[in-house]
Image 1 (cartoon, rainbow, N blue to C red):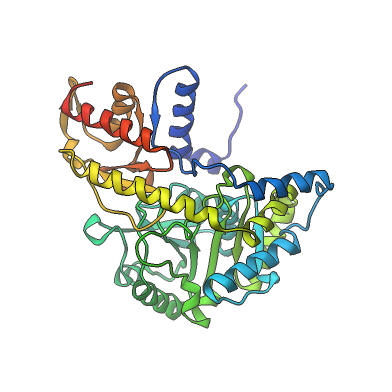
Image 2: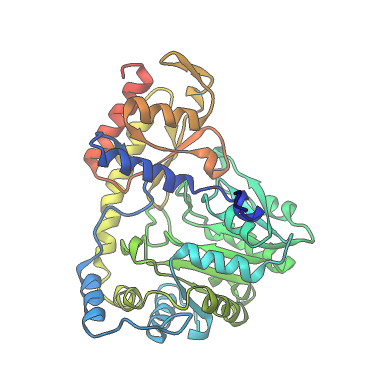
Amino acid sequence: MELNISNKAQRISPSPTLAIDSKFKQMKAQGVPVIGFGAGEPDFNTPDNINKAGIEAIETGFTRYTPASGTLDLKQAVCDKFKRDFGLDYNTSNIVISNGGKHVLTNVFMCICNPMDEVIIPTPYWVSYPEMVAVADAVPVYINTTEENNFKFTAKQFEEAITDKTRALVLNSPSNPTGMVYSREELLAIAEIAVKNNIYVVFDEIYEKLVYNGEHINIATLGDDIKKLTIVVNGMAKAYAMTGWRIGYCAADEKVAKAMSNLQSHTTSNPNSIAQYASVEALNGDQSTIDVMKNEYVKRRDYMVERINSIDGISCLNPDGAFYIFMNVKKLLGKEHYGKVINTASELCEDILEKALVALVPSEGFGIEGYARLSYATSMENIQNGLDRIEKYIKGEC
């Protein structure tokens, strides 16, 4: 008996970052001494004050359904955060709480896109953006960026990509996978074009607390017109080491937020009540743990950048934020390594995993060839040992 799977589901590819992380964890569980640079999550524990709030939620019986789009307390905490950090005024009716940032983004595209609408996505992109757009029956349209331009697209490229079908632009700053951050001037030019053409800006700032060079600018602060078109996407995962708690949130025009709330009421009922309770404490409570994480990330980043650029055959830019290095491996491709020719970043990462026992994420999943992403959300010991192994692999000493 043959089972039928929808055409839409068959077109969806698995997340390459989660697949690499899963393979790494499986090898680790089998006792293989593998070092993983694939994870997109902090290696710090959730801060104690947040954990205690979660326990309090359980002990006081805060374990029932909440409003579909989140509790009023958490929505207010999000509004207060936007006001405190950016001077942005939002009402609770503008806020939607969801089951993680991915859920927010899926809701967004489902609610703003009609079939065959176009969503502009700069490359390299976070792996899930195109799949989410496709699930909404829309079409991803790519703007290619270059390492020479710090992997950032220009306002001119944006304008040239616009058609009468363009519904939205996805803008991720700080970026996953490159760690690059858009400046105020760059965002002003992008905002002007978005407003002129009445195009939504889906502004993913999930790494906004992890900026090391310059400052993070929220594009919604650049004027009332762009604020109305901006859908700000954020969450608790990266800043507060709460990846498993699965709380994301967005701020949007009330019409958009209402549509997202209606959709969510039929798909998930509501976000996890305990995680919402703890997230109020995360946003309103002690913020010092963020600086502790940031300081450690800076040390790791600086070491990785210097070390990678000292190894023949690989190189990288110095990222402004997030916790990733986007390593150029083009000089290693098209050459023979350990008896076989390696032509793609995927083949290279697979060979490095097999021979050097180091897990990297190849760049094809990010829409570009010739690179590998390394996360420095891991210990300095792992970073040093992992880069030692990569250097030995390149030298043919594995």
